[in-house]
Amino acid sequence: MTRSRQLWPYGLAIGVLVSLAGAAALWWTFLRAADTDFPEPAPLPLLQAARRGPAMTLYGANGAQLTKVAAQGKKTNVPVTDPLIKVTENLYVDFKPDGTAFPGSGRKLKFPKDSIIRQSKLDACFPAAIVATVSPVTGPAAGGTQVTVKGTDFTPGSTVTFGSTAATGITVVDETTIRCTTPAKAAGAVDVAVTTDAGAVTKTGAFTYA
Image (cartoon, rainbow, N blue to C red):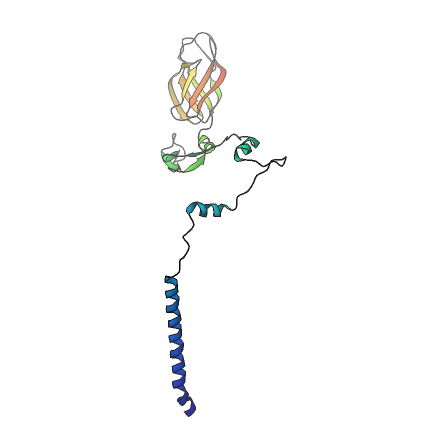
């Protein structure tokens, strides 16, 4: 115990000397750094090139080295059938809160503004209508026949024509039913066309004027 008490001043002195040596070394490092010329950062184009990797040389099937211009002759363009498009405003679809009302009075966000989608996704919102039946199938040339058109994918505001002449009193009951009144036409069979938000669809010779 007495010997330990005698040695502790030596340990303290050694610790102080080690601390002083470390401080001196750190100070010397700072002085050296101030006098050292460090290389300038690489220009941005060089950094970008480094990220891309080393340059390469392209060769044709016959072994000939190709320039960028010559390489363009070794390709064919592939048509883009379903391009990406950017939506420029919020687009909504309707829904029926009660499950029955037509058209739906509710609105749901379908495509947010600035979203990037395929053209096919937008087109899918407009399925082509189908005219299945026209009843009755005949009526007087003077017109005035009450007709019910059955089909699919009718939209609010759909229109109906008989041989290119617009029907009157059109009521779109729902997605599958339209009621209207025939216009006057010359005797004979005519096409019945329904135009929805997706475009026009025709049932050939669907109504005959007598």
